Image (cartoon, rainbow, N blue to C red; front, side, top):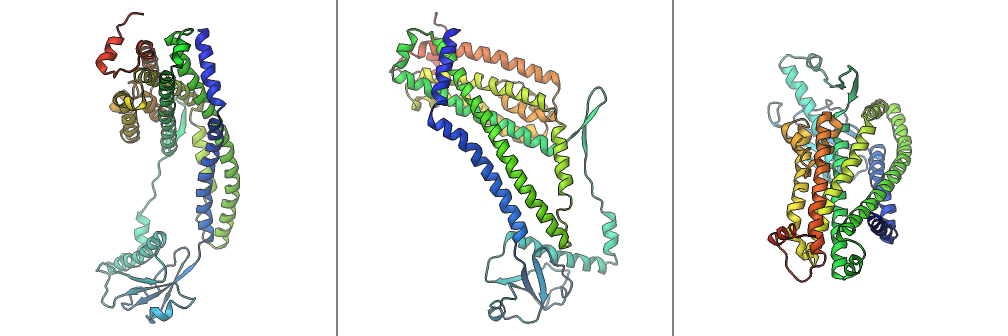
Length: 436
């Protein structure tokens, strides 16, 4: 056990002292925070600083004259003057919309839009909506139905979800938060297994090809070397993840304070302009925070760490076995597919079937089978799967880790000192029955 600790410390210290590790550890949270900060800042800035555009409506049919409601940042004016070369050159008009003389409300509407600049997607929807509302109102009037009567029949329906415990207590549950949290946890485990599992495999191949392992094996048993390498790289990943989470949370918190001030400023502007589109933003934010804090975060974090480490140990041992069985990275392809395919399958199915029905039969089995459980259980976890299923899944994963380590140890012990021979599945099967 002392040798395993020595190898683990060597693998850990060797990697965390590299400049590439330090740079990636510090730069990644900065890039993530900057990415989201820029998106939010641009969105808010665009909302606050969008220029008003004036659109001249040339309505030869007479259906829309003085009937259109002005959307945000758009103003309709009505004119019979339809000479784009002159009208568009003036500073008072940005675009011209023409309606043919033979148009009636019973026909599909085809608008002619002319401007010196391209029509944006947002303005396209606003223009189509404004003209569509006029046609709808006129059709209702033609049928003898007032718009107020139609509006009175429409009722907004929202669902406030609560999870009821066996003791009768209940907590609020937010579908959006559960979905986003499940996806985030699953993706972290998925990428961690791939990123650091491949590092284990490459490290074994490098030591094997450089013949460094021949010197190490003289004092350390192959199994101890494999376990030390797997555990050392796992600690590297945990260190990096912890730093990422802390720094990203701090940076996003700072950005949130800055953006919060901007949102409040925009709310004041909207209120002053009698267009309170953001009037309920504070209530929504408070409800979001309340629903998030209502989740059993301690339970979720502890279970996440279990699958985070367990999934890596399970797959990391297999990656180490692959590295010991080959002489170069090009020879790993035939062995990588059976290992990586369940991971890819689990991430693809979890974001569709499992998330769509987190308590269904397929979701339950995928969260129990160890090949897919590290990803699938994370998707189900925020939705509150039964405790017995979580315990069964954790127990199955633990037994599978022990089995994978035993299996990988058998392959590693023989393959780590074998050179110049192409190994297939038949040969690997023989290594499993070699005596110590």
